[in-house]
Image (cartoon, rainbow, N blue to C red):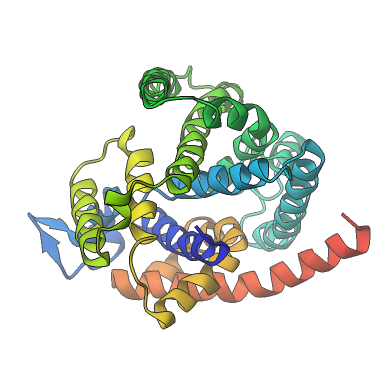
Length: 336
């Protein structure tokens, strides 16, 4: 997988994230006006089931860090530096949107000192719940050398399969515990973190296995045509859109990415995904401020799903450009 292809897939993943966060509601018909239905259910609701962006981002992260590992470029120092840069982007976004939120909803922004501290660290994401990914992602990245060293060095297919099965069982068990927390908001925030670590480590490990597969790809897979991979990709999207199976999210993202890498992509489409991918991080951190927390009436006021989706993509992308520029200037100034 080239860096350009990885960036394109990030662009696809951010679009999937927008579909998920915009239309993952039981009352979607009251929020907007779907035009296409399948089996008495809006098409967009089916697509939500096939939109699991976290698995995509974690698989890409697992792949990329494994590449660094195999080239002796993965160090704890570099990971700390990279994560600090990520947090600087996040803190700048907090300053901008919490300041704006204070005028719109002063009871929530900034609220109490505990809320401020929790949101700064990413432990308690009351300002923007979709930032829950930040802290567990950071933990997995800090442990990445240990994870990669174990998964990458599994010697045969049997060990790989046994490891995946065992981890899937652990994943489901921990996930079940996550759905049955006591009900105290702050307490649950602490208890849910290990659940997230297990979930993201599973996806991250699939990225390591993807690296291994592409390193020693069987000729039978290499010789398949782009048309066949396109057909397989369509099948898995259709299948996943019909079933909301949590454990399948990682495998679905794995197959999606693998197929995408073998499909000839039109230059203009690839360029579009690439532009989004380069700005996917600030788009992730800002889009729900628009569609959930601060301006939902404005976003859903465009009525039709495709138009709502397009408006959010445009606004988030335009916002991401100055955010990235300012954050990079801060990083350069403090020399991180």
